[in-house]
Image (cartoon, rainbow, N blue to C red; front, side):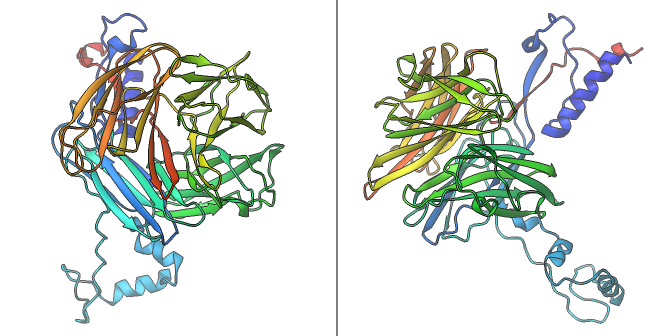
Length: 533
């Protein structure tokens, strides 16, 4: 077999191992050189996993989990999905290590004392043995694509959750965790998309200031321990951290790390870098403010020369941009706002200079001026990788709420937002590089209704708040699936959930990256046996 064919099979086999699909195909020999679209097809993944952080420690918290899988062409047959406590997978040996478990010698003696019968109920002495504990019922267990499933948890006892989906329920599976806290530090609405585990995360916009209580939530879904480093960068560079290196996250466990315990330095704006030495984790920052509520700060898109922060609410009274460049090279960025009418430059904030290895914060004030918009950051000269996020305030003095919008990845082939309601949901879509068409599909409701789709045109350089196509006869919450229809034009999106409680404008914003439900694979149009030599 020639070397080209070997490389193709090796690459496709590695991809199959990661994504779960089991189709190996040959390239189209008639396709033009570089014709990626002509030589590739998109197939649905067959397995996916998600992690949800511990929602809250407040007794006044009410958390809702919403699950949804879009109907995907080619995803047929059986399927299963469940969302359950992340700690349920711990083995007896792991539990023994954590407590007063038996020593190895004791375990061997116990095994020699008598075997359990086939039922596992008696040992050789005739005494009844303890049955293993039954696993807890899943928090969510969706049964079919196309319909949201909702579950509620009250108080501060909710654990971190691990979700797995297979078969027709895997492609594009999305879970939203939304918590409403009635009072106290972090009161308001806190929302986060449950995300797959990874090995590196950037969180510009965190804080070690006295008025903030920020936790880095680490969740390990695997059977072996993960070792994690947490680095913190302030306005003058790396902060000295006392316990940020070599943090061990035990198998099937969650570890909330209070950021202020890692350093004695109090800074309003810092960038947190989570690096996994071994294993993989889910990571998110819970930012709780004593007077301005709180929300989840999701990870920024990977460091890049140009960034888009989509869907800043039109009634934002204050917007703070926090940026960081990981290398030792300074970055000069042009700041523009993609408004409903086009790209504009905020007066007085035309550019921002980000020193290498230092966190830079810029107060943009009332930059929205009553219009929807997205921040677009581009290099003024050479391109230097940057991460960024904005903190957004809504409300009036004494009754304000905060949330975060990190730099986002493009929607890609498809993205989904779940937990939408007829009132209080806003979808923002921006196309900074050129005009684009997007198809938006509203699913059936969790308690009834019929799906409906609409197609929208987003003008070049603009952000539009899309008028949501509410499902016919909708009951409960519903999902929104966004599918760009313009090849080669990147589209970015976010969804805002808002509720008003006693005058408090509580809200949360989630960016909508590609749902990773479809994977590009070579087309099967040639018998591989003819390529053998």
